[in-house]
Image (cartoon, rainbow, N blue to C red; front, top):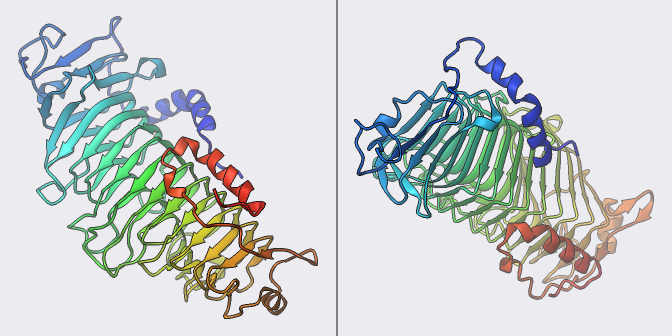
Length: 497
């Protein structure tokens, strides 16, 4: 599928990191050669900024830490459970050695807290080979004075972020901007405004690249009260990027306080992006503003190419489980895959009213083409499985070996020239209902759907859904085996657990 994988990500770091470093810092040497012995700098509320900063004589404030000249292998160690005010600033630093990254962490079981107040908690700019872990980063609150992001990685390479809790910022909890070879694991981003985690670069570029986001939870990021012109309240969003993998993540209860009516947030999604893989993720009960759009589980939005959503679970989102969107002015959308996923009761509140929502406001089918949508279970007791919006011009959309179970109409809108083959169809009220036709055989004859190489494909039958219990699945690491088992059972007409 020509998709970027975590395994490839790790190998490419080793191959290209030194080359990237040389290019990145060739214009100006802004770091010193490492000393023979790396240093550990300690920070403790009981210390003093006049101290040497070692374990027995720790510094007291972040302001003092910001004055340190870092070298390869150095570490900054915050005292467990204590709170430190200010913004930790790391700028124009690199060790040039992957095995000698600077470590920034809190020792002990309890995370140290960096309180950025109305400013960022950690700001890393023009840097390489840093590892930040085991800290809580907090701001004053999205409506209580904060107007910025919590942790910012800007114009960096080879940065590792692990085991951070980030809350109380008006923009994103964690923002990765125009950076490459970034690993983000075990981040809990909650109570922020624009998003839990955001990947971005200048519009029209793909300068954010080779990024892994894994085992993260983004929840209760309600919206940015100052943003009255665009969406906010996302879980994980990746834009103007390439080669991004989002896996084993959870997004829930985001977007409920977006302060506008219009395009809205999504649990996990991307736009203006190439080679994005979203897999083994759970996105559920995400919301949007009253009367606004979206609020869905997952989304491949405008300008997305060569990307995939697979082995994901979506349920009870106010918008569709799968947004398939192309907005006017975006780069062409093409060659994307949605496969081996499960959706239950998505899209009941916003305009989607379906598990999958297809929309193209460009008015040009050449801008919206080549979708492979297969091996998915779309189960919707609230609405349809697929909804084609009024604006939907497209080319080469294919739907095969899916299980479509809907309340009444299985599909809303015009299926056009889309290819449907080998699917299982069921309307809970009518048995079959597409295009106001309630007889499967008649529909096939009239539309020419469910035929492959001249042979009739697809079936109209009840696959056995009575109690799905998809919501009992809470561990993303078990999703693949769970979904594979369910697909097998449903294929045999044994969906009931």
